[in-house]
Length: 132
Image 1: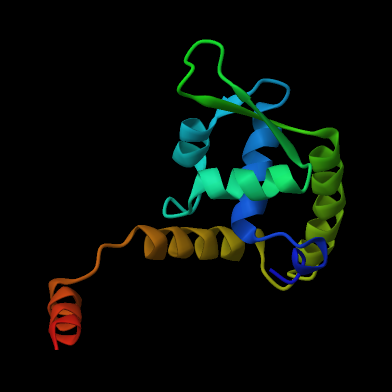
Image 2 (image 1 turned 90 degrees about the vertical axis):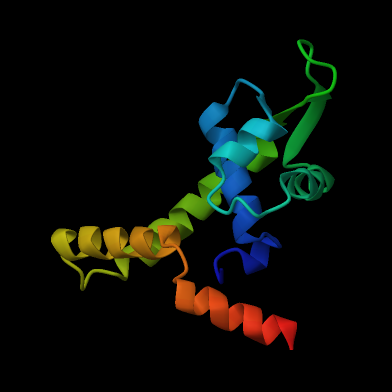
């Protein structure tokens, strides 16, 4: 997150920009962006609005479905990601203490945490707290 602060960018906005770069030069709908986002709880429409205000994306009505909106990353957005790529690479190089095997293990553990279901005991405790 420290990498993004000087660029007035949130991790969720960064995620959207990376999705758009992966799709570039083709447009992508907001619904498709949501499906690809790491944080499914983010409001993708609001994120796109903020990126639009920064001239990092453009938005157009989808020609095939007038209810849908197509989004494309701008050259300014691509340039920003290129700059962030360099900073991220330098940050990753600082993690030299992990072997490739350890990095893979850490990645698997983080995936497991992100995908874990709350236990019944935790759910019951949460209900008790919120009901009081």
